[in-house]
Length: 558
View 1: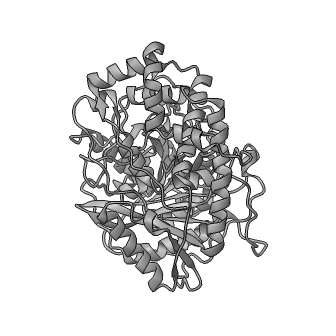
View 2: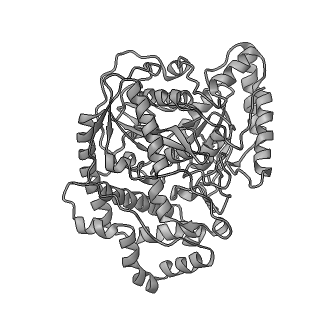
View 3: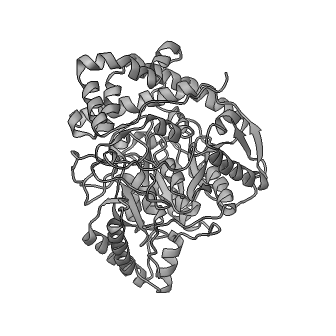
C-alpha cells in the first residue's frame, strides 16, 4: 500500500465568522445541511467507505515485555544513579544542578522558591504574557520549600528531585488546586493528588502551580480563550503546541527543569518539540492515569517534559510503575535505564518510511536528518520501512479521541455554551459520529497495530520529524478571545505523532535543530516497554545538537 496521508484544506475561522459557523453546526436544521461536508473534510466518509472487517481493539493491545534481569533497584535509586548528560550550547538549569546547589550550600530551596515566584510574576507582566502557569499558591510553595530546606540542612534529602521546581498540567489533580482542564466551568478542588503528582511530591519536588493547556486537550496549538494562550519562549508571537502548552513553555522558559504533561494525540511531544525541550510518551499503561481527568481513555498517557534527556529520564523513573488504582498499569515489565549512557548504538536498527519522513517542510526534514546522522555515527543502521494505512489510522485516531472527549464532557454535565467556540465545533462534529464510526475506528486500530508490530520486526526505532514545521504564529485579534478553527495546522502538527497513541507504543521528541530561531524536533517511536532504548538514542542526538537560548528565559540558581 502506498503512502496515503492527505493534506487538509479547510477555511480558518475566528471572531464573527466562527460565531456564525458554530451557530450553524449546533442548530439542527442547518447542521443537517453541513453534516456531509464536515464529515468529508474530517475523513469520516473515507472511514465509512473502507468498511474494515477486523475485530475491534478498544485499547492498545498488551505486549509482552523484553526479558529483564532481576532483581532491579527501585525507580528512585535508578533515577539517582542517572549520569550527568549535559547537551552542548545553551545550558538549561537541570534537576542535577538544583540538587548540587543545595548540597553545596550556594542556595536553598526557600531562596529558589522566592526567585521562582518573582520569575512567575515577571513572566505574567511581560508583554505579551507567557501564560505558562494559570494557577499558583505562594504559601503552598513556600511550605514545600521550607520542608525541603530542612531536609537538606539535616543532610537527608529525599533524592534527585528534592527541592526541584516541577509544574503540573491542569489536567491532573494536585492539592490544593482546582482541576480546570483548560475550561471555564470545571473547577472542583482536588482533595488528593494524581498518582504521578503524589510520586513527585514524595520525592520532594517543589510543585509550584498548574500549567495551562488547550481546552480539554482537544486542540494542539495551546490557544485558550479562557486562561490566555501560552506563548513560545523562543518567540512569543508563536504557539507552544499543545495540549500540554503550559508545561512545554514552563520548562523552555526555565521555570523548572521538569513538568508533567498528558498526551492523547501528541500533547507531550508536540509542545516539547516546538519549545526546544524533551518530551516522552511512554508505553500505554506504563504510567498511571489515576487522578488525570478522564478525557480519552483508550489513547491517553501521562508523562514528563524536561529540559534535557536526563531530566525526562528522571521524571519517567519516578512516575512509571504499577499503581493499584489504575488496572491498566498492572502487569508491566520492570523499567530499564541502566544503559542510558552507553553511546554505542551498534545493532540498533532505525526505520525510515521515506514518503512519510519527507512529508514536512524542508527545515523539519533537514533537522530530522541531522538527528538520524548522529544515530548512525553512534553505530545505528538505517533501514527503509513501511507503515501502511496512515490516512485511515489518522481518521481512526480522530474518531476515537473526539468521541471519547464528547462522552467525557457529557458525563461532566457540560453544555455547548460552556466551551470556547473552537472546541464547540469539534464537539459538534463528534456528535455527528455514529456508533459504527467508533467501532470501525477500533477495527482500523486492530489493523494498524498489526502493521506496526510487523514494522518493528524489522527495526528497533522509527524516526520522523516531530512536526511538519516549526511552531506556527499565534493569530492576532479576535482569535485570542474566541478561538480559531485551524484543521490544517492541527493535522500538520499531528502528522508524525498520532500513531503512537493509536498503537500505544512509546515515543519521544528530542531537539534536533532550528528554523528562523524556532526549535525543531526528531521524533522516535519504539517497541512497547523499550523506553530505555528511546532515551539512550535521544541522549546521542542531544549530545550532538547545539542548543540555543530562548528569547525569554529565567535563571533560578545563583
